[in-house]
Amino acid sequence: MPALDSSPSSIRFGRRQLLLWSALAFAAGGASAQSAPIRSIDVTYDGTTYVLKAVMFAPVPPETAIAVLTDFPNMAKWVPNVTDSHVVKPGDKDMTIEQSGTAKLGSMSFPYTSVREIVMVSPNVIRSTQVKGSMKSQQSTMTVTPEGEGAKMQYELDVVPSFITSAVMSQDLLKKNVEEEFTAIIGEMNKRKK
Image 1 (cartoon, rainbow, N blue to C red):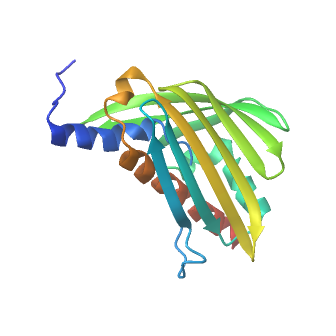
Image 2: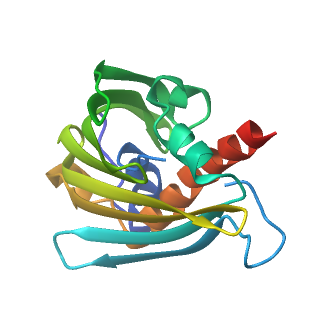
């Protein structure tokens, strides 16, 4: 395996690229601040765990938002860096899914696989827990509530990076990649509204 460049600029670039392994999940634009798809994304890090909290909006009914957020068999069609997504163990309120794709680090590409247990805590709350994958642990909760003529989404992601990814992960990289993922997801919600 070729030696990795450990210069500060290379590490920053690597952080931006390698986090593509971890971000699920998972917006097409709105004109006003009230209807902006990504309203806020905040990331904290305590030396072990990254905690991301995001508030988003889609001008679709909450049922449409939930349908897109749980359309795992088709996510590879519209979520960046996901090449395969399928349900391993189906269920009405809980299921196990497996997703794979390619994360890029400079001129190198790395395949990844993530197996997650998905639980519908209620009709509008989705909880995801990684059972196998590139992170030491990863859990998320998505809450979808009606707001005006659309759906407000509150997302919390807790990530403990693996030994390998801890050297390249950063708060900015996590924020950027989650924003990219949800831009695509909310874009799909908007397509289904029409």
